[in-house]
Image 1 (spheres, helix red, strand yellow):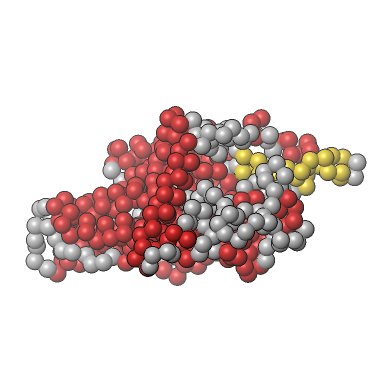
Image 2: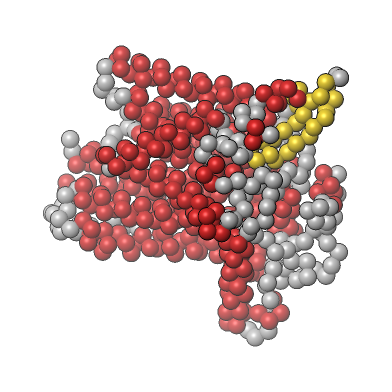
Length: 516
């Protein structure tokens, strides 16, 4: 086997099917997510913040206070009635500036849908549905690259299409689906960069004279793209920083491993001298620039919280830049302090150790006592994962830990690290600060749970050169599991999408009493 194919294994199927298969699975998932997207026709859960903040960004460039409050949501009722005059009656700025808990990129993404389709439930949800659909395609392509199998790539995409939590979050205008999108996109770019870098090393090894450290591999645009995506993740929610740090470390570890695999005598020194400088540019400078760029509306207007516009504009452009940046840093400090100390009780709050086993999902919408011809019906949107997927994924993730410890497989290690980056910080905040948290914080981790299941499915299928009987039994087992997930998702779908169902039928779908 050549050095190139030892470092970059061949794909099992043609490139055409590698695109058509994931596209078909994404189309299926997109139909599920866009179908009847405007239902329920209501401002659901935290849409009361993000839909209106997004509209304020369109109108004013920064978030603005609206009429009413949590106990008297006047603006919500006005929006559903089609009245867009929802702003507080106060001077233009800065008195009406709204103190917001999260950076603006996710709200800008929601705002695009509102700009195109109007200020209505479909308009403020369409960006989430699009992001969720694209995630299915990206995950299918990513899993294909990690397993070298189009079949397994489509299997991963199908599982994501059929996950209840991902489905619900793709149909609600909350920020977490956008965080999940950018995290997954960043990770996928890093995996492509890994292949490209190893390919260049292999080509250099076969054509050039050996050196102790190896060559510089260039600017590596895929890693630069990964840094930009992860900067965008941070610009949706600050928790994106944990993925950025973990993936930056992971990329550098891959660089060291590649140089060692090609046979260099000083692989670690080579990675530090040749790879680290461009890695810092891609995984530190690029994310910072993207993050700052998303705050443009705050910088160029006088309407943002803590903007201090009058002082900034009083003494020339140099002072404007300095004072604006100082005010912005002060605002970020306030936001980080708020996030680390948030401890307000909520009916659907839960602890991180409850999330993997679906012990406390969250209800986004409930409409009870609907008359159905003399019987009582309900409508419910419950953000909960598909149990057949989640319970198996918990076991698969434990299997990834064992696999990495036993064989140092890079795929198992990267999946475990990604899961830990998204879950362990919440465990810390729960133990150290008793922070208020919710189950839907898990949505960025769902793709990595599915990658763990996909890697296990690859072991069940067996090697491409295994006997036909071995492959047939493996394929039947994996197909049977996918069918179980499909049936489980279909059974739950009425309470995932707010369909009108009889009360006994709704109750039958509450797997645990903590779901109700």
